[in-house]
Length: 338
Image (tube, rainbow, N blue to C red; front, side):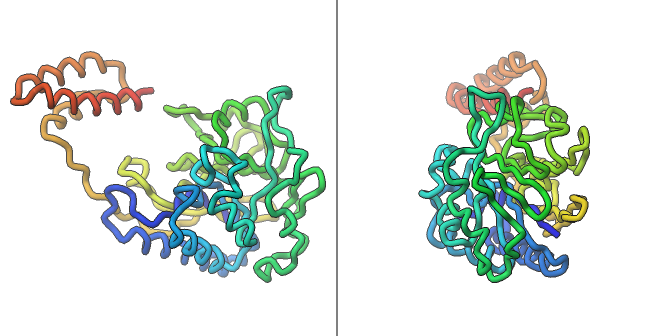
């Protein structure tokens, strides 16, 4: 059995608006992950990226991360996310906390595939396939890593058990590049905005990646989506393990992981925490409330809404100052318009 999780965003300070004990909540979820590893005899944990919230977190966060990972008693394979790297550059890994964990053989970073503008898709780099590919051949890795579980060939080709494996770390514009080519593998893990439906930022639809692999696991898109099939490819994203924002998609979902049967690559989601309200209600200036009631945030009436709000502000004392503040909210509305 394998376990897949993504977007832990380990950090030492709580996200804005969290009203619970944020650190304790992460510890509890990771304790449940460790329990699931024991209950289901998990052999490998795959992480879809953003293990850390910052490439160079505090020393305390780094030590906590190492402790949480080692407590699972299972090898970790981590595909770097945008928060794990400096400026989204995979080459910066040796200067990051994730790179340090890799050098310490606490986690493994899979071989890198790069997009070649001269080709139609991804090609394996000719350099060393990963920072620490040799650890896969180290029978003492965490004292429980089967020597034949993960293998990396000289060409950079990776196999996990009986399946070929490909990793797509985050890179700027990676979604558009994925439309032009995907690493050939039976199991793919990507830190990219893979979605079922059009999204407001760069994205690639699961329908566009149909037939790319037998199993396609993704992160980066925090809400996640249901396990579904497109063109004989099973897509899964259980969502971010950590809830970071007050957005409805974060407030109304249960943190979960995916269990994968290595015999047939069947996927099922398992909750690791209860659905509870962990964010405080956001307080906004009173004059903004009527706008929220009238403005279609996903419509095309922003011009009319802006004029209504401008008039409302100017009718009040210090109207010009209020209008400057109100424009910030309008910019937010424009940014979320599809």
